Length: 191
Image 1: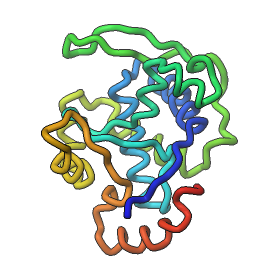
Image 2: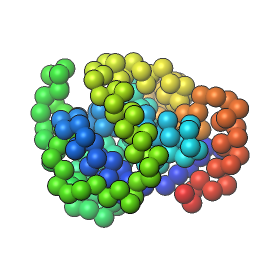
Image 3: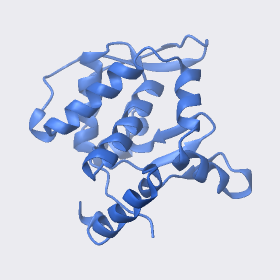
Image 4: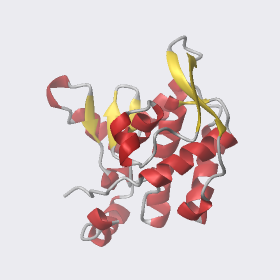
């Protein structure tokens, strides 16, 4: 049975704000990949994700769906997050591959560090530092190798454009995965 978490939009907003200050000019693709990599790493190390976002496998890799909706200004998700817009500047521009994307910059307030644990920040910093210079293709290739992505992509219906990803499949070590599922399954929906 999949681990079903409720996305923590307040934490997602703070991490996007943090990213805009730490790596001004990061684009939406980097943002959703960094969140995925950080959630995956934090889950493996500490037994819980950071954002608890809903992840989907798309042709270009895993996507933190609520985070992407926030970046793209989806009014329903913004309302769900109890905000009118992200507290940072978003600018539409051309990515290095020539396609339009959204860039994050200019935080409009300080990050509310009370919403993020020290391990949240440490893991997110490690991920941003490690992958900040990766191209779109490098991030895509990296995440396409993850078992959770491969499993989801293989199970998509009728060759669909996306498929849900599951947190338990983000843990590559099978023994650790089973122990995590046993511990989290009864409480995941309440986290």
